[in-house]
Image (cartoon, rainbow, N blue to C red; front, side, top):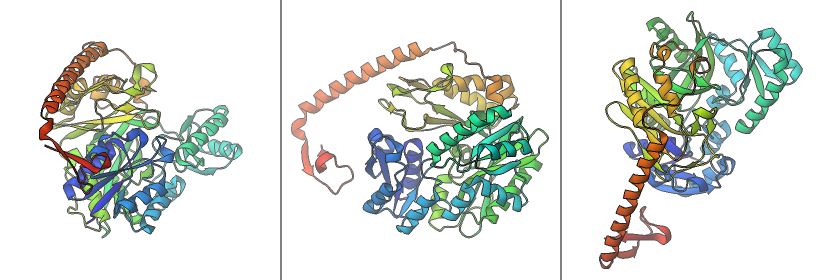
Length: 504
């Protein structure tokens, strides 16, 4: 087993990996940008290193700097989390060349499945149906010809894409030139590669993904499906497991396809295969995410599997301790983002002055929120993942509504009102979903009850109380100062600046 693992990420996923390391008995090394100096993943890790300015390209995307820090820290493994460098085959290979184990699939798997066109070809060769599409389009002319052959509407996609970046839906030929330019520019900014291809745009469809994990001994396990149809601009907002659209027969079909794909590419680690399922139950492969997913807690809650911990064990060469898992109950995740749903979901930046996190039976919150956190424009607006579990889907929804109402974040706008309105939508409650749900059903409307102004007043009162308590504690400490001593202890993790530690 590894002795020390560097986490090449930030925020809630970095904190999640720190916790997995703690449970396994591995020391966790955090990296951080100037903007994240006070982040929770930095505070909780055994060691933490500054890697650059706030801009991701100068910090979390600076692979050479991260590997240099890993060497200096003596890390023998590296976990990329998701986003940033998680699916970068060159970075994965550079880690291995530096003698640092990569917690994820092999560079070959990353390279193969990261090229969406190549991935589609491999799946078709393995007998898995794929969404009709094109080769890479290298000019406006080749794109126009391919679109005509596929038939409008079409979807423009980045060959190195993911997370909704570099994607545009085109309904008519005259929309194509502008959409191509915008998609290519966005893809180049997000992935450093502006290459594009086209797919048939299918609707109404469900977006169903399948979670798998495989070890180096050839054992691959199907961990059920997740429903990901609640999306906005091709980005997931709510996920759940299992899916109301998947019966026993379709589940067996998805399992067989997923495991066939895993064995075909000799895949190891966690991975997710994404499919589109139409109203007749026809399945088409869309892409594979060769990393941990944002929504992995949903699967963990219904299976009892620790995906992050098991991903680390597999990377260390251990075999999976199970060959199949059972799904129990229902789980749901709402992605809490710093966005204003009443203003076209524009990002919200500022200082989180007050946070009150929900709890109780069946509630899980993955976040790195704290009072005083600065939300900047440098990173993705995702700030927390609120998950609930219940014996039935209805119980899970009821629990989610309760938890959303308990979740108070003051100082910035969030999309919590959006999630509440979805949870109360009759079609959603009945499981009548497809990828156009948000566009068709959501209308931003103010909620009655405890308004933002009242929450702000409550937060101000709490903060004033905390400030008063802090002043009283400081006075008490000053009176007891003679009982304090300072000593040099540079070998300890709890040392402060200049290596001094305070002892009572």
